[in-house]
Image (tube, rainbow, N blue to C red):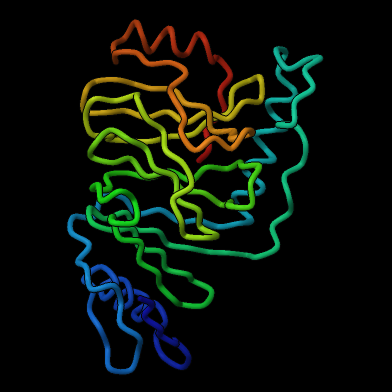
Length: 236
């Protein structure tokens, strides 16, 4: 399942490229452990995950939200400092149609999560979720072809929750942001022309989550959305 490659004494950048190619194609090597025997298919998205960067991004957004006028006199756990990063994880994450590939840039080990682990639905997009009250964090959300968002724990590599009932078609894109009130939201866009708002706080750790707001994409609806969340802070 994991392919090992040590980059000492040679061009590490070239080996990273070879490593990614082998992981995407599901190939094996006589000197390493075999990867998952599943070809990735079409690559939908590539993202970089860094524990320390995510920590400071979240702290920055919490600080900005706490200074907003609408946040006055609100006592929310969103303003408390997140747990400090201790693991120093650095991943390149590749979202493919048939699997997700996690390449640990510290250990140079890769891990495949086939779509069979995510209800056997094609993966189309992904987004990291910054907050969770459980021990499953960090979390990554995958938008799928059936209109359901599935959340994977990067700690246990298990499916921990689903966002359901928002889309009637495939999910095209995902984005997180923090409102002026300090609430973290996940926004999904779908092939059905809908823009759906979800809660991404996971304070109650529910396994099945339903949308907070669903609206048809148009100039008026986007204007109304911005009016409701005028001081949202985008997680970049």
